[in-house]
Image (cartoon, rainbow, N blue to C red):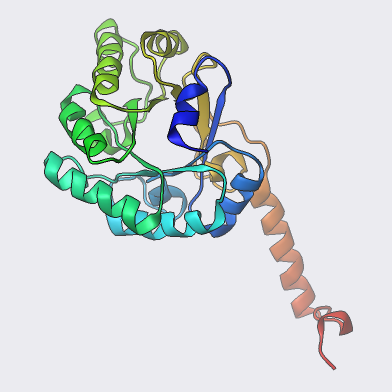
Length: 262
């Protein structure tokens, strides 16, 4: 899968995207035939236990993306640019995007924000690095918003999101994530741009969907967002398996001869 293939899917075939953060999760997602893997800065929460994505560093993103690249052979890999890796100025942003692509072998980067980052997006794309945009709820701005509530519910905020989508399309993004916005607004944005939109909490009218690996498989249960559908409850199964292992060890039921060398 490559960037032009993803772009060509708009209006023809829905795009599936999931996060992955290591070799094993990447192999699972890749073998399942998902179109895009996002190495998300959400790892700050589901892998590191932080209460936001803000503490994640560029070195940590590169570390995890390297592992994902080892496990995913067919899927397009996009890596989040973490907080303060692109906000200061576009020159630093290009250098950091270049580091991510060069050191991980990923296919593209993703950054949050609208028109205020159009110059930055254009500079990164001009350097030969594809960029995925991200509008609506932008988790790196949590200290400004104060909550993870849906965005774009007011007429003024909705208008800005539509305009921002056009700005960043013009700047060169190949797709746009729309997070936690009303489904009617997501449909309007999707119809207003020629690049694919990928929704998370944005209804079914977008060109694709993304969820966090640990959320949709039921590994992460610190909280559950409205838009999360749990396709499995693997944490519960894992806890039961570990309980059984512990019981068998304490009762000398494991290992048996089957698991022992002569």
